Length: 289
Image 1 (cartoon, rainbow, N blue to C red):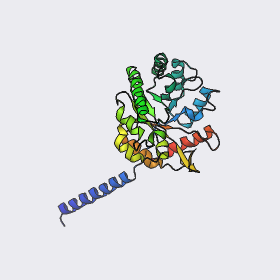
Image 2 (cartoon, helix red, strand yellow):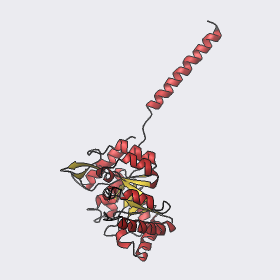
Image 3 (cartoon, one colour):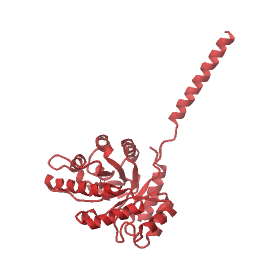
Image 4 (spheres, rainbow, N blue to C red):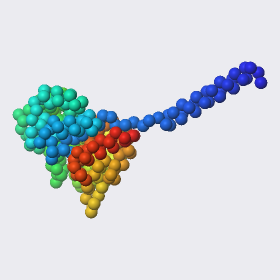
C-alpha cells in the first residue's frame, strides 16, 4: 500500500467516523420543550380575587411566563389600570397575552365592547377571546353566531388586536351530521377571527385532534392544555400527566400545525388550585416533544 493509499484510507475512516458521530448526535439531540408556556387565570378563580398580585406572583414563580386572563369580579385586569397592570406584570417577568372576556354580555353593546378593546390594547394584550357561547339548536342559530363573531372580530381588528373563539365540546358534537366547529371555521373571516383549541374538549367530544389540525391548523393560534379521565362516562380533570390525553403526541401535532401559545388550564383539583398548577408547571418544564 502506497503512502497515497494510506492517506486516502485515513481520510475515509475519518469521514466515516465523523458521519457516524454526526448522525448519532442528531439521534441523541435534545427534544424541544414548550417555552414559554402560560396559564389561564380561570384556574385560580376561587382565590385570585382576594389578592390578585400575590396569586399571579406565585404563578410566575412556578414558571408560567404568559397569562391568559378572564373577566372576573374585578374585570380582566383585576382592578388595576392598564399602566399599573403592565408595570406589575413586567416586574414579575410575565406577559399577559390574551383574555377571555364577557363576550355574551357585551357583544351587542358597542360602548362596552369598545371599553374592553381599549383596555386590552393599553395593557399590551394580543388577543380578546370569546370563552363560551353554548350549544345551538339549529343551523340558523349557528349562522347568527357566526355573523356576530365576524362583526365583533372586525371591531377588535381595527384596534390592532386579534379576536378569537375558544371551543368546548359542544361545537365538536354533530348537528344533523355536521360539526358546528367546522362551520365556524369555514364561515368566519380569517382576517378577523382566529381560534383557540381546547385540547381536552376536542378529545372529550371524540374528534381526532390530528386529523382536525391537519385540515384547520392554520386557523388556530392558541391552545389550552388540560388533562382528564372519564368517571362514570363523565370527564373529570386532573393534574397534567395523570389523565388520558397523550400530550407528547398532541402537542407535537399542535406545534406542527403552527399553534403559537400553549396555555395550561385546570378547573378541578385533587388538592388545591395552586398545588395542581405547581404540578402542571413541573410537567410542562419536563415535557419534551
